[in-house]
Image (cartoon, rainbow, N blue to C red; front, side, top):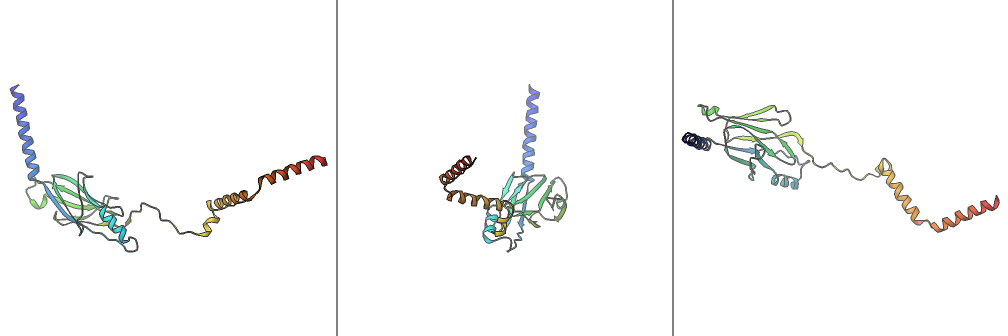
Length: 199
């Protein structure tokens, strides 16, 4: 029983020491998101909505941060290990940031490795030497479109594909609406009677 208590005490001490080590050895990342909106592709309303719905995510949402008015961000308390920083936007796709933090390395300049990667090819794109100068850029010509563009009305579209079927159905509806069904039945009966008399 005494040995078990000693082991538990040692484990508690190790846990406390490890917790203090993590608290003392955390990293703060500061950076900026570069937005390159083209006026022909993005109006002011879309730009405002994109800014309101965009945020920085660390490791798939374990920590999130919103941008300031000048598109800067801060992520605090990053623990040792490998981390992924992403910028979520509804309009553009952005490069991901990889952070590798190892405070056990004696040389402080080599404790942190930060670089950006292409989220589609995972190719390393750009390296950053300081954790307070991280820049997240959008992929060129990678605008995300959630809705299909609607073409303007064209009269020729009514004469092809489903358009002609719709036109025929509408014409049949109006024709049947204007026809006197009782009169048609009487004419049909008279025609049958005349055929029977002739025979």
